[in-house]
Length: 389
Ligand code: SF4
Image (tube, rainbow, N blue to C red; front, side):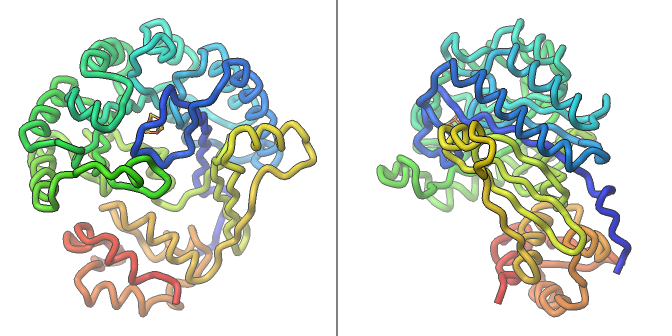
């Protein structure tokens, strides 16, 4: 078993800003629409006090990535984002290479903060990567999934954005209600006009606790979905590398923040519903913050009230968590990675790896394990072989 040096496991910071202009009918994220601007300042102050507590634990460990997610982080005024970033760099060790991603939605109102002034301000604060929730360039599709923006909003926002930032991710979705192959082709052509460094392409799935779950829209057939997947793959193959189940990158423009999750690195999550994973000597600690923003804020105000739940997955449960993450990546993993990141002994679980290899879902090449093409295409089958008994 390799010697585990916890301080060498990369550490990321996630900041959850859980408000949106409107709730999309397919969205099962922790995002809410009832908000009041006066909340925002107090919320940021509470995030700062959460951060302060963490900084006492992580005084020595540097932060490799910072991610503002939501919700719609660009609903927050610049001045508050700057205030928080200043405190982050004060409390934690971040350097000039730290990837700082900020999620944005194009929006169609002045609430949306999509101006050149806002973008320049983010850059000045240290943000160096923007992730945009475009989802589609087609107005019919955007309307069908209840987005607040239309294609005009997207074009004007992206034009400004690419003038200010070069490291940009665009989120797109396929398998949308009423979406045809032709519409998808046109989305791909529009996408290529901007040629972002990174693309995340997700299939629309209907999740419990969403409006679409109770009022299910008519989705394209399985065969049509398969054709869409092939179309995306063949279109992007020349300029992008698919390095994760839904993520495509140009050159070295991976999303380092997500890579750290998938490689089972450590992370601190601050804000309502944020999750943290911390390696301790011999075990992993997971924390989940209370997801309701008002309740989270209430607990944070009363300093002696706990605002999170703790779990310590061990043994097969931990193995399964590792597999759920690492098999999303094409790069595979070494036995030693597995042992360092989980604290488990590989030999105790070898039979499960052998079974996955025998089924053709995993392969071993020298010391590295990779999902095969079949394993990548049937990822849930591969992952379910590692379910705890
Ligand atoms: S904008 Fe994103 S986070 Fe907000 S409701 Fe829509 S899908 Fe959810």
